[in-house]
Image (cartoon, one colour):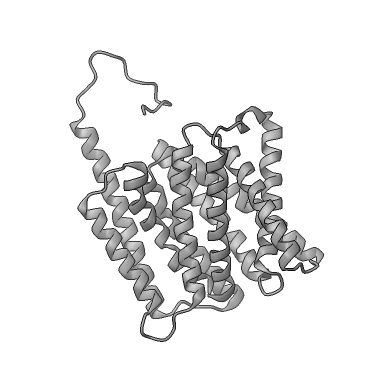
Length: 307
């Protein structure tokens, strides 16, 4: 049940993220990226503080790992700039197709960071997936764009953030990620707005930016909850559902249709990720099958998980 809950939460999270990305692309022609990120941060911080206040759960904001929170936030902010730049300059579906590399990064990083075991089959799937990324980048065809590498930066930053959340997850509350992360990003983006420029926002754009930030904050909480309930290799491939919403929004709003090369590359990457998911499920079943039954102690309650 925990794995099923993790999958469900990831599906909700990525749908909410897509909603915010649509807003970002819509307003990115009017406002600089640092200002968009500033508004996302302000509204996101408001959501997390409101949730903590309602739950009267301020004690769970205590941390002995503030430095890691700040580092994770700064890495995520760099990835946010890369992804938002890609959304601004590429069709949304094309940007998502490149960001599909995130689950591949997660699987590769799970070995050195989380000491998870990844067999040759999943390593092969990761390599094939990166071939799909190269297909979409089309080296030698004269169509490489800086925005494409912005999307890959976003994917890598997301993967690193996931690994850090898994590391912090044993001692930190879900709300602490949002609060410390948004406070850090608020400080950085506020300085950028003061130094790099500010465009006076229209009322309707404020509503859009505020709503997008709220949805992204809720999606962030869902992602954290998902990775706490299921292994990274299980949750990460469901990132691919964003291509459905991104393609639909791109067609209906901007009349964008992915070209054949992008679809081929995205298909390779998605297939690799789904195979990684399949191998993770098989590995878990094999592990359960060879595990000897416990005879000296009662089993743990269903809602507990042994570490």
